[in-house]
Image (cartoon, rainbow, N blue to C red):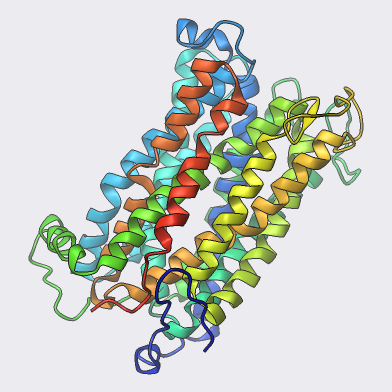
Length: 485
């Protein structure tokens, strides 16, 4: 199998290791991939394209932040800052809980009961978002942010167990395609959910019909922003329906050989942490992922907010923007999964991160009347056709580049850990994987929020993510992908 070496050995798993796992039935593999489909509307509708920008631009007013925000700041600065702080709180909780829960699951064997309990938390958190009315009081804002934190925490903790189950479904030399296809299925789930919201539920602003020219299935009050607020309950119902096959057909992992269920989860976790220096590539990879995932998370959290603020996008433009990026992301995940098994996950991650940096710089080079930082262009005319201004078109082009490479970074990261982590402690290592993605996840959102508040500029605030991506890409050069023992 061909490999590409970038700053270190990128050896593939041996045929013997690859044959340790027998491919699970198609029904089980498809049902496992439906987990990504079920949870994706939370990321697509709530975090990135619809509810997040609505929260920053309508739910919160700058007066909420009082003297904490610079005088004369942009309208959405306070909302962006509060959303960033909530994302930071969720990341901190995920970092604390994910390794401990992973160790507990490895010791006791079952993963799906943990996912069932977290599903209830996830559904409750999403449902709370309906309360996010425009110009909300502080109590309502805090309740909505608590719901967002609950949903984000539950989704990420469920992923720890789902990722661990993945390693028992296919041989190791097929993990790239399974991981990439699962990620692509998730993106298509986000695409379909966006299409349903824009085409069947939410009317075009100022119109009585949806984007497809149909009467909305639900009579939503536009003046009360019910079209924006419905995204939370919609994502909850979507998850409740599509997670059912996972619980019915995906085989749970049995207790690992040598596991000690009588020992506490913290004791098991401490043993694993002490063993990390003997596995330097795993340790370097976890640190690198910690950094580049911080930057990627911040781009997802604030990309839609930034575009909505610069161009005054409403639900229509944000919906179209989301559909485009979700579609290109799905194809990027499929192609990235194929490259993963052909070239190795390390190569996919490094090349995709370099492209991601270029795309992020390009996005930040655009403001209301400039592209590439210095080239002047005509400002978007109020009420004009979506993406008709030069600034919007350049912004969209760079955003598409980010969308194409973001999914391969994440899918290949999951595949890489599944290939190199000790199989008997795989859930613990995926707990550490989630830990590495969240232990400093507050840093990038916090940096964006802090710099935004201090400067009153969303563009300068967003620029903080570039350092996280660049350092993470550099560290990946020193990862050797030989399986750990």
